[in-house]
Structures are given as C-alpha cells and as structure tokens.
Length: 121
Image (tube, rainbow, N blue to C red; front, side):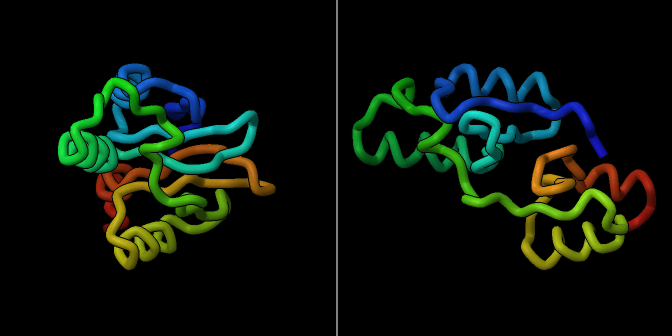
C-alpha cells in the first residue's frame, strides 16, 4: 500500500492535476474538498474530459479537478482488508486501484501493480 499518495483539491486546474498524477506515479490522484475525499481522477478520466471538451469546443485548460473526477464516492476498501479482497474488488469493478480507508479516512492507495508484485494475482 502507498501511504503517501497524490492529492488535489476540487479547485485544482487541469495542469496542476496532471502534474500531481505524474509526480505520484500511480496513474491517478485523489480529490479532496476540504479534508473530505470526494473522488479520484485516473489517466482515463483525463482523456475522457479532454475528449468531452473537444467535442463541445470548450477550452480544456478551464477544467477543474472537481469536474473531471469519477466515482463519487470513489471505490474504497478497509485498510485492514486482505490483499486478496482488494484483488477481488479490483477485478470485479475492472479498476486498477483502490483507496484504503480507516475510520472512513483515506490512509493509502492499493494499486494492482502492488498486488502483482506480491504475487497476490
């Protein structure tokens, strides 16, 4: 599990969001409003937002994280769950990461590459 994970505010610009995703090296970022997790943004969400902007002749640089995010609320798993449960959830939902929570607060990110490296899947 990655205990230090990418985070942006809902007001973050597209450029700030992309920089955070790149720096975080997980292909995603979490999105917070105040101290509350409200969603996640994946590389795919960015592509879909750009396609949406282009189809409607909107300036993609006007996009904010709150308008790009997917999964409100995001898919989460209890931080004390077994890795096999995380793998099952990811497979059933066809996603590559989960936000791990403890007492409803995000504590880390479980990425499918972590499960592959640990030979869980």
